[in-house]
Every structure is written in C-alpha cells, then in structure tokens.
Image (cartoon, rainbow, N blue to C red):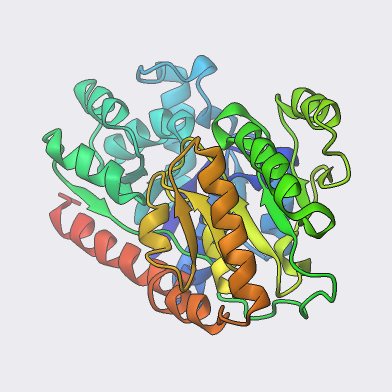
Length: 360
C-alpha cells in the first residue's frame, strides 16, 4: 500500500513543532510495517533534509499551498497540476497533516477517487471544509478535540493518540542535582512568563539550591522574556539557550521537563521526555493530564498558577532527591500507550475503515 503524507515544509525553527516530527515518526513506523510511504510538501526546507537523512521519499509540490490558507477549493490550473501529480504518484490513500495542504490535496484526491484522511483538532475547520464539498475522514490526536468534533456531528472522526520512539537512554544523574528543561517555541501560549515567576519564588525558597531553568527555542516573546528575567535578577537561574536539535537526548537522568503552557493539544515533547524516563511538570491543558495521570510520572497544575507551579517543581525535586521517582515507570507507560508502533497500529485501523467505506 502506498500512503502519501501531505504536510507543509518547515524551516529550522519550526522543526521544534509537533506536526513535522509526528509525520516523520508515523511514516517511519509505517515503513517498518511494510508500507510504501511518500511525503509531499509545498517547498524544500529543513524538514525535507531530515526526511532525506531517514531515506524517506519526498515530493516537492508547490501546488500544495494556497495563498493565505483561505477556506476555498483550488483554482482549476492548480487542481489540474496537482491531479496530474497524484495520478503519477498513484497513492492508495492521502493523509493530510496541515490545513494549507489539505485544502489542495483533498479536492484533488476526491477528483481521482483516492480516500483522504485529515489530521485536524478544530471543529470549525472540519465543518467548513466539508461545507465546501471536501470528502475526508478526520483524525484527532487530542481526546478533547475529538470529543468536540464528534459532538459537533462530524461523521468519520477518529481518535488516534500520537506517539514517539521509545528511547531509554537518559543520561547519568547530575552530581549538582536536577535542572529544568523547556523545549519549544517562545510565545505567549507556552506560558514562560508564568515559569519565570515560579523561578523567582523557587529561588526565594531554595536560595543557592534553586534549580536552573534551561530554555531551548526561540520566538516572538524571547527578547521580552530575557528582559523580564534580567530585571527580576534571574539571569543566574534562567538560561536562554536558543534553538538546538536533540536537546532531550543530552539531558541528565535527573532533569525535569517543564511545560507551563496555556494551551496545547497533545504535545510530543511530553512523550519524548517520558520515553527517556524523565519526570514532567506541566499544566493541565489538552491531553497532558491523560499522558501524566498520577505522581509516578510527574506533576500537573492549573495553567497560570505561579505558586502551584513552584510547589509542583519542589515536590518533583524532592522525589528525585529522595530516590522516590522511578524512571522505568514513564518508559513503560510510553511503550504501552504512546510508542510509534502503537501509533502506526491505531492509524492503520483508521485506514482500514476509510478504505472499506471508499467507493474506490
């Protein structure tokens, strides 16, 4: 079976985002299961280079991107070029992972009678696309989004939890104690302003024993937050490291992933930390509490709660220092529920239903 994954190309900074990594993880797992996989993107970029390193076939199709991602079918010349592209490729199923490419790929697939699947977490987008005649099945990786979509009356909607490789290679425990690690884009919804306030409280409580928060990423809020950290006197315990790939691979076994977000769906970085046996301190957004169901795996607090976040970090530090945290627990939970093999199996179950219901 040939599966065409359609996704927008990403630059270096955007490779920290979940969509591209999720596509790469899924496609690699599908190849291991014996399927042919091609990845389609609208422009070359860092994601194409990453796919090439993995030996995955990549097709660059500029027709996949509509200006402004407006909810409208592509014009006839674009449709003709994209239809010819799909006819040449000959996929059995088209799996779209971003709105821009879905608005082009799905109409072309519909014209050729190729079943289409669209990863989407927004009810409004799904219903608007179907309203203009697009036919596709919807996959949500976030249970909350899936429930909203099904309550909205959308048919052929499926919940498939996302997954990442299981990598049990956490580094040795650091002699100086645990540090906090943030990995992602630096923007308002990530809640780093709350994390900085919590770091101020932690240093007040712990003095010289305060952990260091290492921030890996970049974004629109970076300059502002650097200034806040400097004016608050936190430069010794808050370090802006810039964008680096493979950060978690180099983390010590005693490090804690910090996710203070105001909004998430199903963040891959939580699963990547779990797969390495790292504890997680995160806010109760999206499916994070489902991923981290109890204190064996980390701590969950309300979004925006500064004192609660500081308390949770202290509690997690105490568990690590007292050797009450067992890194095998998150690894086993990840392997059972969130590995790429489980992701591929669950996705294939959706494909089977879609293929059975397709006229083709």
